[in-house]
Length: 182
Length: 276
Image 1 (cartoon, each protein chain N blue to C red):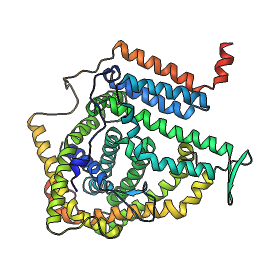
Image 2: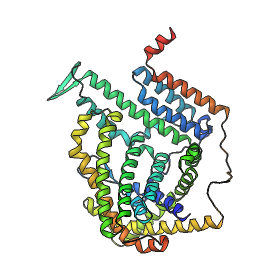
Image 3: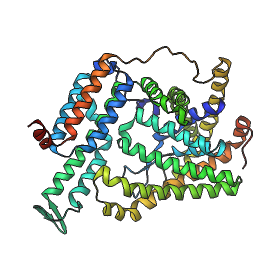
């Protein structure tokens, strides 16, 4: 019951965070950074990977219902969801194995790497279908654009999550109780 | 930074129209079908018909055309990039050369395909935004819950997901308002959000996010308590104020969409041959 409302409210927080977007300088404006991954990461560390993924799902449905146009239609929503689930899922799963502060940092690194990998594969596989850009053009964009953008995006989300989590874990302990570690 | 004033939440336009009255499940189904069809269409005749069909729905749903076009504004840049990449780097060998720009050759085929793909992008966004223009988020959530119900057997928590959506929808305005308050409070203490490089801007967000998370968890806690106090216990035997019911008009709408999709998706020649 508590988990339930927590996931719902965190999903709303994630949606609200979409408005805090800012472009990352060298990239074109539609590749924007927004901290909406942070609430899902908090959920994954505090409650477990399943809950992190649930937050991502709530966020994705909210976006498609409320502001589908702003992220480039269904394609953008799907890619965002895929990236988020990979990041949150991998980070959360690893944190289950190594439930320490160092493990948390490692899990964030693995999560970001996995997300970057999945985004590169997904872009190579899906962009030609959606935007008709030939596949070798997409592959040519991997090194200058896809790889650094996703790494940077993941790194910023991880950093924010790290600092925020450090500061709120005292409160989390009160509300979640059983499984907070670092 | 007055968030709540600039941010319009949701895209729903509350008017009375035949499209608005349709069952949300019908509309979700029809839009899903249209999205598939948009990818299947292979010729310009199909796209012309599709445009006419979408335009017909817009007129029928009493949504101002200007509003639909405004919904396309966020993708303009994406569209431009897609068009440019397609025109100059189409990867199509040969074809009729239109003009050269240094090492770049623009062929007629590439331009045709660029227009094709650009249009497909627009059609996709228009089709999906038609759904959100004519269906309120609450109705959509209801529809999703009912559509997911058959998948409960394989472990899809349909009711729980819908309930979480409803809660999240209710909290978005509250949270945005609260965010604004926190931002103002931190600015009064000298915080800066719009300056510096990416990492500095990200770090600047931390003092906003921490109180926001704390209050979010507090709200979740209070809500859970309130729900428990009212004996909420999941989807079993829950009654609802508004029952979803299929009406004859839903069958009609779905029939029209399916028929139209079949016409769009198959090339013109196939139909000519078929009718002969």
